[in-house]
Image (tube, rainbow, N blue to C red):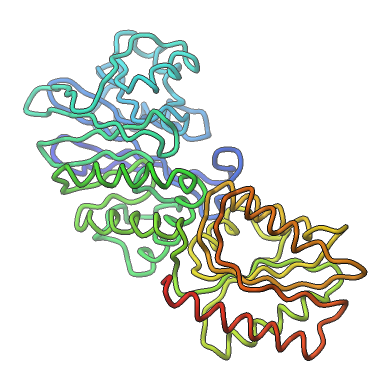
Length: 405
Ligand code: FEO
């Protein structure tokens, strides 16, 4: 766990967590940070105390002591969000100290009570404040449904610091550099990619609420954004706000100038056309991602489709339906409400089609509103004329994405 002073009276305690499935689902190949903040006036508050998945709150207590904060001197636990990556230590803390107050929204209060059997809670609403003394006055600003209903921002007006919890966060472990102005260009690119993966995996379904939360951030004068996951933005907080705004557009059909090929093949017939498609994309100078299902991680699959302006679905018919690993991937993308993408499908069939019908059902059921180019299906191996139709479809796709990047 690392400890850093980030502003007057404010400390960051952060740890990297690896080798877990985030939310029990998402593979985080590059880890994730869990960030806690200590705010000191005459009284002391901790925002989003974390223990990680090691289940050892003593690690947190020891690190508090190393910055001169005795756990028994903490007066307030500010729970910006009840999800246990931010609150999982509360029951243990009760053993250290009995007279503290939890500060949270009404929605979080219900869950704090049901998960941790806590009732010494002060419920806060928009604009409510907590005076810690010595000029440290925190205010609270609910931002519901980003991705749970309970979340709020905490804001310190004396340093203009926004504690944004999951908002403006990213996957990815932090090395020695925790602030935006310290990141090398490679580290900045890493956190852009990990931010996209985090947003698409965790928050994508809730894009309308994220937009409202971005608007709420704009009403506060912000010098520093201190999220619950990932780096702290003190040089250019607007950059991560703008990035999140861009991510909301990715969820609604915009994307980077790249194509993702989501593909699967039973006996290599569809694969032949995928290899041909790659040659066309290379010739046209288009960057592309290639995801073979079911071998690809779900986390990467969702992120690549989310960030790409164009999607190629390459999958055969299997038992009169779409090749199941690709169908499941598209269902997951639909659950994440990734809408409005420009897409093109091709694939092989043996004795009967059926893939196309199921693809249409998936798009319809999930209200994905994807802009589909007419599909290309071929019997058995792709012939020269089939590949010519694949090429024409790809060129149409590239034309369509010009308006989406
Ligand atoms: Fe970082 Fe929604 O938990």
